[in-house]
Length: 406
Ligand code: PMP
Image (cartoon, rainbow, N blue to C red):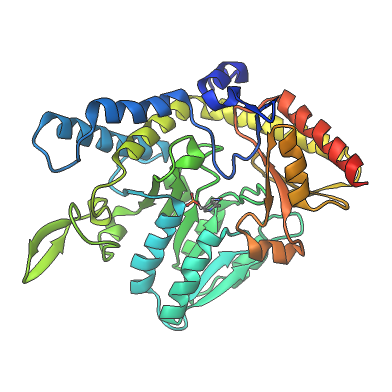
């Protein structure tokens, strides 16, 4: 583990130096999107200033440089996911597109009437709605594994819902609403035991700890660049290459073909098979830079975040009338909460006046909120660049909010 000092990483993030309503920005909305280090911002500038050319098609130097940088970013992604080959790493727009791709390409060709798709109550809408649409089209049925009142997956119930009918199990590695870390390897193992294909939504996990895809044993893993200190508009879907190669393409056009003839067209293998048209070249390159920035500090950053989580949990618990929603055995630094007599939206607005950015509402998890009997929560979500001083700022501001609402 390399030494980690939050004071040394903060200057890497230019936005953290700005004021909001005259106060220093306290950015606690990292589960929605993370901030970007200067090296990522510079990578975007540099690409357009010095390298801009289309990839894969040119024989000129700039195109060769752009192609090399784009493909190098794919190698970085593979390393980030613990893979020895980048062949299964498809650049997509984000986790949402990655899941839609699997629903469309795998779901449409593998699901039949009577098949079951097992989801969990923790899922983000991005890992629910694509399956609903595919279920409607194929006649497959959606089955939902429950969570306990603390926000843990009910593993016994999950196991009980698996059967020979279960063709796909799709679940989030980490809950964006409650911070729950699912026992993803164990859930995958159980799903594989009944012969199911497994997709893991890694959107929230990738930002908080090292992900080892081979150790998880899943078939698909998706995450978004913008939550992982990279730009918006880029993300990754990893799929087992031999499985990806059997799927019909997602979109059609340039770059994904082997040979086009009006008599018929043949397609390339993964990953190009799923990257029709000009990709987000600068986004992929900058995502590679972001991942290279975090990889050396990942373990120490995680330890720092866990300390922030423990301190913030204790600080918030001490505020009368405040209830923490979601106290799973293993969590990332995400805290959902309610204050007696206060609507989450009002809490968010009052904190904003103190320069504190949190998120309020259903967090794109309406079924989870319904299950918990809540219209929504207020959510503070931390990254490794947050500080203990910011935890205290949050606590003090919430005490003020609480007094106003009492
Ligand atoms: N899954 C989870 C768990 C998420 O938190 C999010 C983003 N809030 C998504 C999927 C969708 O990610 P994106 O909007 O970047 O595609």
